Length: 179
Image (cartoon, rainbow, N blue to C red; front, side, top):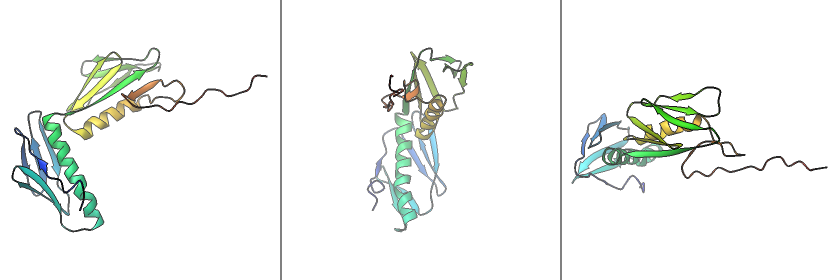
């Protein structure tokens, strides 16, 4: 039995979950999320809890069991508290500012980089720190990864965009001997 999949998901107050054969809908104070159901996995509502079970012990169904439970749990957490990721910009002259709902960044290129924030995601820029937040964990992570990919941190001076708390492995510079 899956250690993750067998755990029931408690439904907090203010959250409604609808289970259809084709999809699961989770609605809460911050919004509504939908997820399709996977073959070989059964989702049921029992005693103000969501229980995920699998049809049999085939490897495909065992893999889907824990995944489906984690996706539903992330939807419940998203509509109650939401998710956020913080990125920081390091480098001389590297800046970020809001331009309407979009991010305008100076990243050492000859032009400004403008990142259009997707629908359902909010981005806040303040003092070379970007906070990406939303109700969908997947969308928040994807938007943060796209922003980081605009200028990945380089290993010599650490200039670029990195997650807060991320450790960049540094390389030493030139190792030539003086004559």
